[in-house]
Amino acid sequence: MDWSQLRYFQTLAKEGNFTKAAEKMSLTQPALSRSISRLEEEIGVPLFERMNRGVVLNEYGAIFLEHAGRALSDIDEAIQKIRDMVDPLHGTVSLAFIQTLGSSYVPELISQFQKRFPGIQIRLYQDTTKRILDQVEAEEVNIGFCSPQEPVNNLECSLMAKEELYLIVPSNHRLADQKAVDLKEVSDEPFIFFKQDTALRDIIDKLCLEAGFEPKIVFEGLEERTVADLVAANLGVALTPFSANIDESQVSLLRVRQPKSFLHIYIVWKAKGYMSPAATTFKNFALEYAMRFKKKR
Image (cartoon, rainbow, N blue to C red; front, side, top):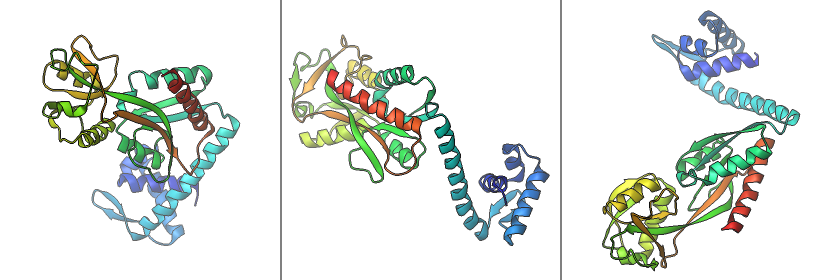
């Protein structure tokens, strides 16, 4: 039994078809079939049920896949650790972040990081807070920038930024000339909200509840610009962070006195488990950048 056999077995289990698995592994189908047969002979039992259109794992195969997967993962981690020891300032870091950071914060952070560490590449993903937390915990990404509302098991986090949320109203709105308002002053008005599962949606739901009302939602958007444009069209009011994409000739941004309205954004990473030197370097740089960012604010 060798490493290649385990990898072939894992791929066939995933694909469920000899032809597809062979193509994925750049093998001929007969070569893959012989490798699986030798593996089954060595173990002493068949691992697959042969079907008309492919194969499926039997009860022995399911047990073997679980342990083979762990073995392959350990081998991959060992290889990565050795490569990192040889060249710690090269590699790839995967970063997932919520939409509100995409316009300036993340691009500026990445730009400054790569000036100092040009050999480290950053792979970027944008998603919701819930999905990012799941990805970090499953080690699908190294670092997450998101806004968890509750402590999360198995993850470490540090406050990275605090964004004030403004009430935006049309420029002809009755409150447009005010500098600050209480949120309850618009309790009877239609609201433009952010979509479910976004960090802003969870926070704005709680703020409206704290202000003592259930908002009348007329539209749900994903981006600040879309939400602001709908407000400008007199379709409702909204709560949103400041964005350079908002046309302030069409809407007014009002500070919210009560309740205090902020979006807290955290950097999160896996509490236990291997983090490559490249990922550790990026994490430390991001924490330093966050400190400088907060001082500038």
